[in-house]
Length: 480
Figure 1 (tube, helix red, strand yellow):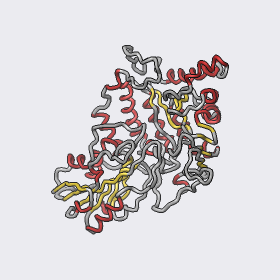
Figure 2: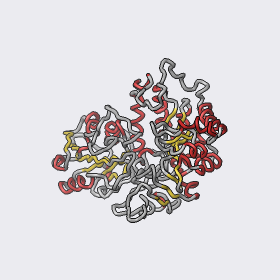
Figure 3: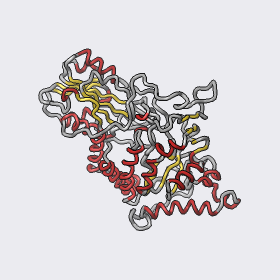
Figure 4: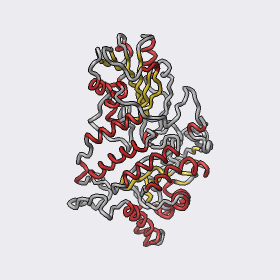
């Protein structure tokens, strides 16, 4: 959705659940501008391809979260625009692109009151982001005036001295390879000054004060629980962890978010809203009623994988959503291939692409969509074909020509079924706009030097991959 009001409402629900759980720091939102459309975490970002979009949407999100006494942590600073070898690869980026494309959403977040920022795994111009003084001090504090604290991603701190001196304030604990547990000894040895440590602590306290955490804005935490003294013990959980934070009201907000973000790609002859009375309707494709897929490493059919994924038993599939809402159809059935819809008046195709943290997608194609639509159209020239495309980002649309209508859903989550039913029947109108440009089937967006990057010959993949952002400000639709 491009609607700041919808973002505000969604963020209010998120903040409510954080308060219920007793969590006073939110590791989000993700606001990186999507440079590489295949990047594994594109589904998380508020920005899409455009820094103005990200700047417009992050403001209400941050304000809603911080108003509840929760510190918003925008991420990832900076140039974390692909997942492939993200912990060792280098992004080579010019200053104009930094200032015009990649930094503006962060500046908007800080202006809105975000109290924290997470530095990225990757290197920028040869140095890791979490020990990069140019990123953490020159650009972040001196140029755009950030006053909160910088926290590392898990395992993104490689040297305590370099990171502390460069501007990292908190290391996210990761186990035996933590670096900041060395700070007390390094301070005694004079390798890190007391002034530097005081400044780090000051940034944390400033963010807490600004969020009202010392003034009662965030509920006082329970005092009947003491965490273990061993920071490497990762199995402990506070008492509030298992409290159910969601509600019917929040699920209604999530459902409305799906509607607000749904993009109507095609609607030939007013196919939608669908007149269902007396119609034989068949849903086609396994994802019409399937939530998980064994081929996925993380996540599910309707939610991307990784740290942004929340496992739930409350997913309502498109099939169930339509069955719950449509009562006047002659029949409403489902099958995994086109033959199931041989005698149907309407075929609703469910197709899904997947992505997840840690790796990029291999291709733009929407799996099964072209095959299912082609088979349906070969079977009947007059049947109405509606495509429900669940996507994490940009996909090709070679299947669109033979479909009558198509809705693009960007990782809609557990309320996909009821939202789809509203959209198909006309009880709700799709409110989304494309945050990313859609490629043609054989479109080549980058040279190998630009994405995914290159390695010293003869290697094609390596952990020291270098991605040259030589396109400058011509990101996404600006070039394509």
